[in-house]
Each structure stands twice: as structure tokens, then as C-alpha cells.
Length: 264
Image (cartoon, rainbow, N blue to C red):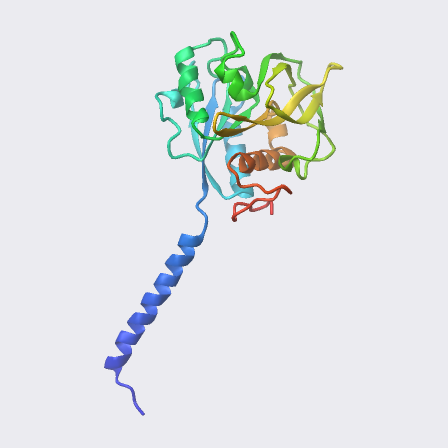
């Protein structure tokens, strides 16, 4: 029996329609990438290359898109007004802006955004922003207070406990190069993840997590040199810290909901 081509045409259209719908449904079911804002700049570090290291390293490891906002101005223009982090799932602060000022208005703009629920990853020199006074709200966002650092020297880091952020982190790791920050105060709600020793006998907290308002915060003082930041241990731990802060990490340190790539 011959079938008329006039009848086949509508059938072909239906197949294309259902095929397209199935494809769209599959795309709809796929998780949207985490939208991450990297606020960076301020001198004293190779921030252009660090932005590249962090962007490429994180996008290889987890399902995310990193947007870089870089400036060497005294006060970073990313924090221009309330609502500055709208549309982002997490903000990485890797910056040395506003080191020697306690600008209460600017601190409030920054901290209000996180207190309302925007997660954060605080990296290295972010600990030395807004150093005067304290502990004020910015230092409560950090979870620690630091005023200075030891001389440049590799840091030997010892893991504390078995928090999922530290899954895959060796019991002891020595960075290729380093600049260990002296921590003079730790907020009561901070969970220590690792301690570091460099040129002095004193050990200082160098990895931790805590909560600030409605937001989860991951922090590390490690990350002065590119050589350290390029290490798999460094990038893997930062990636897990971001997943934990955004609620995408299970109790064993594995990414959930399809947000892992090389971490799975």
C-alpha cells in the first residue's frame, strides 16, 4: 500500500515538534551554572593572572560561570550601591582595596548584601581590607581579624577535622610559596578547617567556614603567589568551599545536583 506524501508531511512535522520539545525539556532540566562574581584588584598581587587562574580553574571543576570585576581604585567600584550582587549566586573577594580605611558606609553596602543571603568566598588579601578598628561588620563577614603577615615563605598546612570542604585535602600540604597571615582574632561561630605554620612557631588559621547573617562564608588566607593558586589542592578546596557556601556539596565532599565536573 502506498502512503500519500501529503500525509507524510504532517507526520514529519509532528516528529520534529516532539523532538524539539524533548530537546528543550532536557535543556530545561539541566542545572543552570552558578553565577559567580569575582571582585579583585587593589595592587600588591598579580591580580590579572590570578583572575585567569581562578576563572579557568573553577570553571573546569564545577558547573559555574565566573564574571570578573577588576579595579585598582582605592575603593572598589563593584560596591557602588546596595544590590550590587544582584543576579549572582556567590561573590569571591580577592582584593586589597580599602586596606587602610574603615569606610562605614562602604562596609555597610558590602556586608548588608551578604547578610541578606548572598554567599561569599573570602580570599587572602580580602582579610586586610578595612583593617582600622574592629572587629566591625566587615571583619565579622570575614570571620577573622588580621593586621599583617609573616615574611614570604612556604606554608605547611595541617587539616583540622573532616569537614566536607576539605575532602581530598591531604593531612599535610606545603605550598610552593607563601605569605602566612597572622590571625589575631577568630569569631565565635567559625569552624576551623586548617592551620598553617611558616617562618614562626605560631600556627595560624588559614582555612575556615562560618555563617554571616543568612549567608554561608568560606575563607582562606592562602593565595598570595600564583604558584600556590595554580595547585590542584588550592583550586579543588576553593571549588568545594564555593559549593558548600551555595548549598551544592554533600556530607562527603561531592558536588550535588550536577554541579561537579572534575570534582566528581
